[in-house]
Length: 304
Image (cartoon, rainbow, N blue to C red):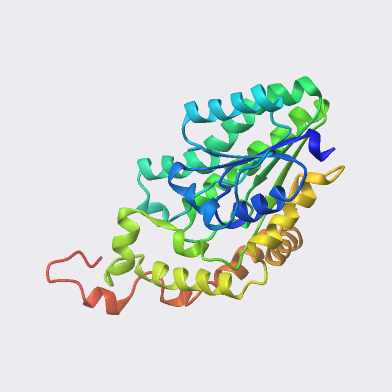
C-alpha cells in the first residue's frame, strides 16, 4: 500500500528529480524530498511544499553526516526507507587529458560514491523487513561513452556495474534493484554541465589540440536535447512505473534513443558499432591536427 511506504529521493529540486517529486506529492506515499541547501528555494518556486506526508530536507549527498541524519530521521519517524530513488548527479565536460585527479574524484563522488553510500545505509532496514526498492537514475552514458564526457561516463559505468552486482546480492531479501537510463531529454540540462579548468581553456583557444572536440560536441549535444521528445516528466513516469512494477527490470531505457542504442549494442559487431558512432560525430574530420591551427601558433612553438 502506498500509504505504508516511505520514498526518499535525492536531487529532487530540478529536472527529472523535480518531476518525480511533483508526481509523488500527489500520491499517498510518505515522501522525503532532498536537495542541497542552496537549492531548497526551488521547491517553493514550483509550488512544492511540505504536508503531513511530504518532507523537504537539505541533503548534500557527498556529506556522510547529512546522509546518516536523513536516514536516521526516516527510521525514527516513518520506520525507514522503503523506496530509495537516487537521482542527484553532476556532469563534467572534458576529454581525458583535461581532467585532473581532484576533478575526477569530484565527478565520482557525486555520481557514484554518494548513491552507493545511500544504498548502503538503507539496506539493513530493507533486509530486516524483507522488501525494498532501489532505483537509480543512470544514463545512456552508462552504456556508451561520448568524447568530452569521459569522467561522466566513468561514473555511470561504475554505477551500472555496482548495481548489477547488487541485483544478485539482495534478491534473496526481495529487494528490487533498477537502473533507469534516460538518453537525451528536452531540458536545459546541457547548460549546467561543468567544465574543468583545462577544458574551458581549450574550448576558447583555437590553437588547443582538442579545441574542435569542444566547439563541435557542445552545440551538437544541445541540439539533440532540444530536438528530443523526451521530457523530465516522461522520464519521471518511467521511474514511477518501475517503482510500482511487480518485477522491475534491472535496466530500464527511459527514452527512445536509449532503446535504439541498446539495440545497436546488441545487434552490431563491436567494431562496426564504434565505427558507426565515430562517423556520426559532428565534423569529426576537423578534429585532431589542423594546419590552420598549427599555423596560428606563435614562433618557436612545438609544431611536432
